[in-house]
Amino acid sequence: MTPVGLPHILFLSSCLFFIGMYGFFTRRNLITILMSLELMLNSVNINFVAFNKYLYPQNLSGIFFTIFIITIAAAEAAVAIAIIINLFRSSNSIDVIDAKEMKH
Amino acid sequence: MEIEILLALNQEWLLCLSIFLLLILFLTIENINQTLIAHTIHALLLVQVLFIWAEPKQVTVFNGMYTTNGLIQFQKSLLSLGFLLISALSLNWLKNCKSIIEFYILLLSSLLGMYFMLSASHMLMFYLGLEMATIPLAAAANLDIEKRKSGEAAMKLIYSSAFSSAILLMGISLIYGACGSLHFAEISNNLVQNNLSIFGFIMLFSGFAFKISAVPFHLWTADVYEGAPLPITAFLSVVSKMAVSFVFIKILFQVFVSLEVIYTISLSVLSILTMVVGNLFAIRQENMKRFLAFSSITQVAYILIALMGLQGMAQGAIIYFLLIYLFSTVAAFGVIGIVSEAYNKENISDYKGFYAQNKFLSWTLAIALFSLAGVPPTAGFFGKFFLVMAGASKGYFILIIIAALNMIISFYYYLRIVRYMFMEEATESLQKISVQPVSKLALIICLLGMVCLGLYGPVYEYILTFSNTL
Image (cartoon, rainbow over all chains, first blue to last red):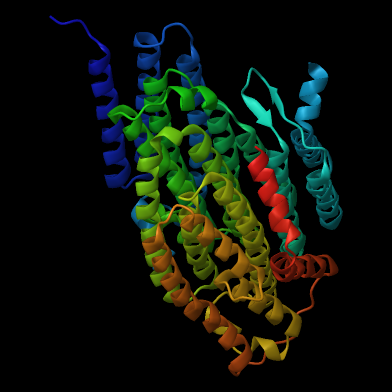
């Protein structure tokens, strides 16, 4: 058994990032797209914490950054959900396919 | 120490104060006087603009997270000037707007975010400023709350900006892994060219390209511009684009100096794509707002060309160009806003025979379009000339030939509107539009800016000395 090292964690976080990106491009439900976005942001958090722990344990700037990312992701999700609710009121659907008022 | 913080953050304090005042007003007063609020905010923004003449000083506070100097102060004043002109021009819209206080709270907090973003010298501060600048804008794009288009625009804006900031953050985290620090100065000291740092830089770069809507990442722009209320569209295309470009200059030239080869290649690919695609799409637009969206995409390409040049020249040329871009775009959006408020029409073909009744408005729009296209007597020509000169300073002549060819194409679609206004008969009779005095004053300021900035040399020299001393 090899111990878990930095490469394993980076592999995990990049997998999560690209799964999130795949979800962002292929899902049709607006809430699911939001979840994929959160997945991408969380993979960044894993990256920061891993770099901080394995490479630069002398200061904590990576870990501080994650705290701010989590907070801002929450704020972003709040605004996004408010917008989704407003869209749902006007069209009774949160399918991204129905957002086709403007096209060219 | 406390006094130092107070003095360094003077512009930010002023904005915070007005946001809090507006919040208190919003909670306590029921019958609001729209004009009074608008004029109070205008006065406040005017004070912000007058900081242009404040004593330039170099201050670093908050453990080196926040720095300010003469150049940054100047850039902040330019952003305030942009917002002031936009707000004065959209007075007609604001008078009918039920949520005027929300409008100002959201846009002022976005402006505050941009201020912090400009002053950031640490990645965390930069990221916080960027998010503070974009999240309120998404909410503001939904201000026409009954209109479905507005909701769709807000949805597209928040999703694409969240996606782009996720990519940007991934880039920042990889650069942290490569350098071990998030301070700009330390990153630029520790950065060496290896696979990790290149990958991180490319991600950061694409995040930025999203925000300034360079071409592979431009898809949200036209839809958001069309759906959002006009003042918000103008704010997005002028103030927010200016802020991101200023920071982009700073990050490229101060932080990623050691990756110069990589960023030159990425910039050249991106600028060629942006010019060609932006131009081709602008030709086929029928809606005025969508048309201006693609025109602003094309203008970004010329900024990207200048970024490839030597630092001193590029910085001065870009700031000068953005100043002219501010006046031209604000004037164009202002006229379109006044027209769409009066006639409820936004298509290009609706401008047929516009000159017959509205002489002042059509001259303003025509000069703004000439300036955007870069026809010599207007300032737009000089702006583009200096941008291309800066791009030529390192000898990328093929790119400059492509840029020149694209400028010729762009004459077609800019001048098509001028032809509609002056040379074609109106299909139906249009009435004369009465313009508010404040809006008229703002239009005259824009006109003066577009005509005089190019002919009055000291402005460019002033900006150039600023950017060379730092």
